[in-house]
Amino acid sequence: MWEEFKKFAIKGNVLDLAVAVVIGGAFGKIVSSLVDNIIMPLVGVLLGGKSFEKLSFTIVDAEVKYGIFIQSIVDFFIISFSIFMFIKILNSLKRKKEEEVVGEEPKVDPEIELLAEIRDLLKEQKQEKAGN
Image (cartoon, rainbow, N blue to C red; front, side):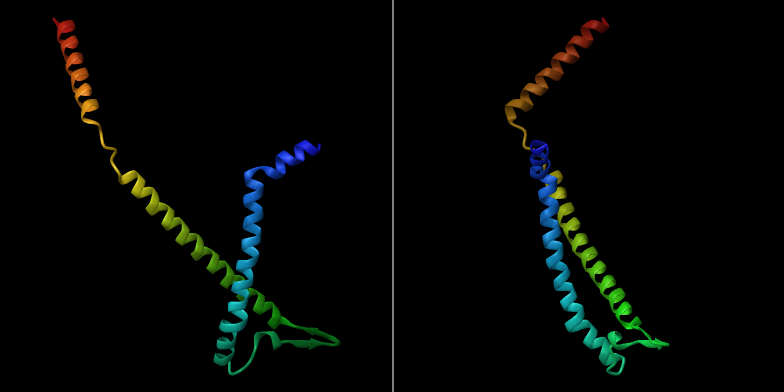
């Protein structure tokens, strides 16, 4: 069982996933900081100094803090859009690299080109003889 676990844990996919989780966590913190410290203060100014997080209402003894929920939705959309843009940029860079590789025509050695011509001539002669 230990050997199976080692094979599973050392596979490239598991390590790639672990790296992605760590980077994703760090990226999430950066975007959360962007939302909390830059975007939401600007939105607060537009709303006349009000903050989403302070929005609430009470029913009997329960306080419903719907502003925090709205803040979470805004955070989600900003993080989702940021990740979408990041992936889109990576994909466009990947496509450009693939196009460069595909666009390059391999240089054919003149000797190989000459041998190919001789081969084609021999095939033609063989077909002419078979046709007679």
